[in-house]
Length: 210
Image 1 (cartoon, rainbow, N blue to C red):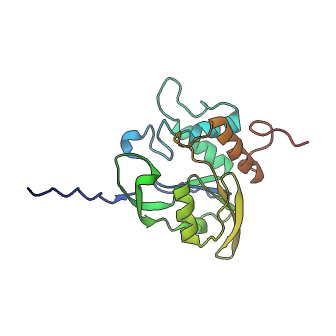
Image 2 (cartoon, one colour; image 1 turned 90 degrees about the horizontal axis):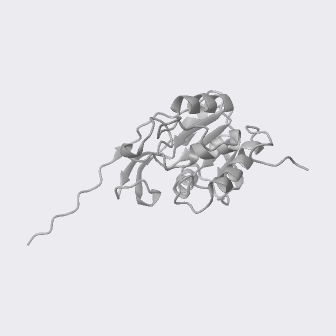
């Protein structure tokens, strides 16, 4: 009896355009969005079970529910976009095309077919002074694409140069609930980065310096 070969995963192109506010000082890069069936809005980090926008809410407003639509199981896309534009934060991912090797959103089962041209993104962000990766696969893909020799520890950063520009690479903890760290601790780590870049003042997520 013949065995039926497994169907090869179909390449999937990125469903979103890069979000690049003209005056952004920080470019945050994940790996790739989850399947649309997991989306609660048509924007980055759309999965209601992903805590990125709760981390932002905790950092900047002391309220993890700040970016949730009242009475709905969805994030507030318009409020998020207005906030990111005002604060100078750009978003995209390190892969333009992937294959999902399993029917889930885990980076572990993402095969990158085409990495993002990060240099092209940076050319559109003349004031950008740092990149933050939000997971191991994003970090590995970025470092390979930009030939960054040193990998920062989770919560830390390293300096690097690209096309004559001096930037910093921050390695942030994943906002996925699969990453074993409490939301408040993740927010503390993100808040420290935001402060170092002048995006967040002391007071909400960080104590005042002595």
